[in-house]
Image (cartoon, rainbow, N blue to C red; front, side, top):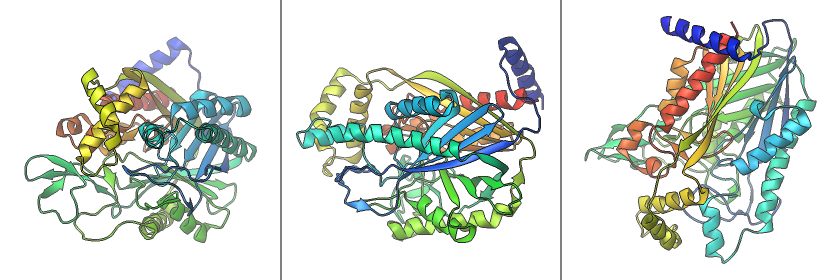
Length: 473
């Protein structure tokens, strides 16, 4: 309590001095709208993202979509967009957020665009795009530029549709628990090292090197007088990497929505935000089972849905909605590389798909080239926090965040229920803990930020949450 009192004193002084305005408590109606647009590339034969091997798309198994939630209370508007993509980049999100500001009167500070991290979506940026251009003797073609423009247009369109659908809603929030689907994929090995994905039934793997987060975050929207929700925002910390193949797919969130619609109606809208899961996937290494394909995605989606359906009645009512959003932006240092390392990586880029080259060596090649392509020794990191009411908030973070960082934000939040979403507004790759940086392995080799960035991002989130909480009192 002394800690909370200290923050309250500091933050009240901060807001009085800067004259920052927040809405007072009142009976202002909360309104919400949902908008959905396709983000499937219109061009055939698009490369697919997700793996260290070339995949050219042959069709669509299930839709890739941008799903938008617009919230409005009095003169405050917020837009939340979730895209079936492996990641989002500033080139696209900056354009989309500018469009949202111009067309929907939602300031950039009050919009967020996140990716779900499906590994069966289009490849539209980064080292792999450059590699395939070099491999096939091409330069960036008009189709890729066209898709980026189309993507920002569709994101903006989803928000416009959601704004046009605004209507009064009741909001309920809380967590269900599902601990049978996710597994920390980093393991302490008998030789003292830490290894990611050590393989099934590996006797050299001692125990997981980190936890999971079994909480399923839920924000349910229902119309006045309705017994059941017509829309639901779900967050869960689990990699979307179950499908594989050459067809576009949203992975398990698609099956989550289909199962929920069986119970809640065909018009029910399921919106999914990926929680911190940089070191968490669906592979149970204690079992010698095949866990790949649409059957596995369906199992995960249906299991999540059944867990949610069993818990809907226990969600807590948001008695006094109190909408506000804050953000913080800072430049964080990137990892360094020498001219010799860059020359080596440029010379070896042609080996990215070569399985005779050690995997982590190929990951290092990609990392160095990506750092060079960024053209800076820092990266702008944006963290956002949204207050829904006095007991519920959502945090939005960039990159693939390690699970312990997300758990620490939740544990220290002054809100009773705090949901955390990763891969928001930009993708600076993996964001490990300082402990994981010391341990090494794939996620560390595939990171871009310098050690300590994860803890700094978590602290930024905590500060925003305290500002939102105590400015409301």
